[in-house]
Image (cartoon, rainbow, N blue to C red; front, top):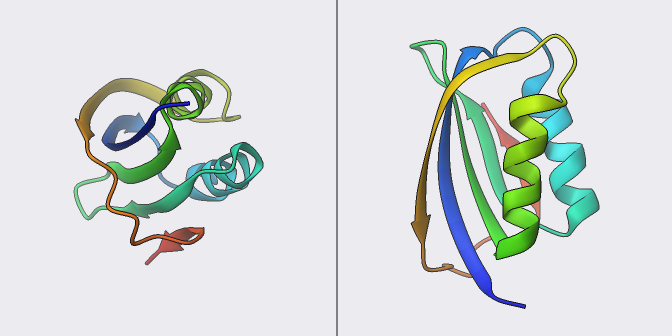
Length: 92
């Protein structure tokens, strides 16, 4: 198990479709920590920490399996884990 962190920005129809709630539920199920939030420009940003394989799973989930969402573009920055997060939260 390789511990990693990823900052991800999702573009497309990602606000007003329960994207954050679905992301939070799946991140918790996968044992990931971090956060997800809406941005004023219509994008969604997320920060995931945990097993690298599980982070890849949630990115795939967010891109393809959130009902009503349509991710047209996404950008991932892999980082070292910070250890500052103890749960996965929705930031407002």
